[in-house]
Image 1 (cartoon, rainbow over the protein chains, first blue to last red):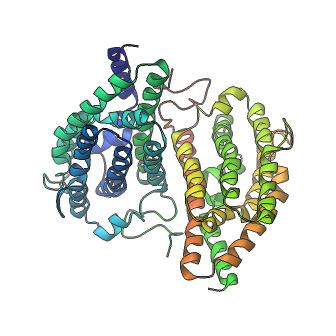
Image 2 (cartoon, chains in turn red, brown):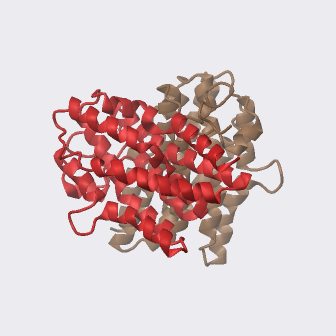
Image 3 (tube, helix red, strand yellow):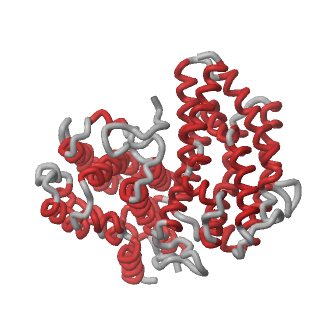
Length: 246
Length: 246
């Protein structure tokens, strides 16, 4: 495949498997969730946000070119900020604040679904253990995120009176950060995935990452829409389901 | 806590969080699943079976006492057998054979749910990355497995005409193997978890492992009972859901 052919195939994978098609995502943006379900989403997704700089640091640790490390470092700045109270993780906590969670509960991650934890950890391990090319390719879901973020923000603001511009502060910078990051990662992949086996590995990495995001929403859907909250997780009210660590 | 106190607490965790309480497990043993759902269970659970010797080998690699390695090695013999065509993995394939799957599809694991993959990998990583005490403690779910195996075998034989004694050959040896293994692991834990922090870590390890088994059944439940099969996974008939790797 040419670089253009590979890029077209990657965009096709995103079209088919990115979570913009997931029922939970559609319900979220269409205002079909109740406050409890939106809270569950924000609580669980915090763990993903909190682990992103960890996977980016482990990726940077394998970039031998200072130029590339400098570029990749902007991702850490975006998430961790330049000072306390700044950055994407902090902005995500504004969302969980606005939804009435104590920060201690959110930051401990003890109330999240095991399905969330396993999916996010799978991503961290993938980036740490696979080739640098696959690690970079697994970030390519950001090619597709601006569309879902735009729809999500406008849909949530329109439909939920417990959501405000301020609580959604996380998403606005992402509209410019994600495309910039995605373009860099895509140009790396286009340049370095020349052989057929490399191109196969890149496509599999993107599919894997789509699976991570999809599985996180499956876990939320099963627990908080279908009503099967597992032992130990947030019960949807003020505590944890029986069987929790005391 | 005394060793007896710790053991009592571990048995309590099992009572509350082991998957004998999971709705999918109850439906399986009560004959409430259709053939497609039983097939999905066998196909996905194969990945767990196949990875067990890998986690046991990584655990053995950290046992410094030959006596302990020799004892732990019986687990590998149980799963891998002494010769081709023997062992627990092979017996699990008799089940998937009996349910009409091609071995190539099963052994490739390409049709399993991402939720299954992430949960099983979380277990493998846990055993590899945590302390030896935690790794051994995470195997203690076997304290509770004989009960569920007995009920499962008798229930499946009674209710499903597509299941025979022969296809369930995996489970009979487990009725004696699992208690033997569990007793050894329990005696290790009783002896080595003396400090409060060690006892906490042991309880958390058992909870983690209960979460792994529970999450595997949640994924099956969501996909094949509630009808939300994710992109790329087995469609319940003869192929994979759209979005699969070509």
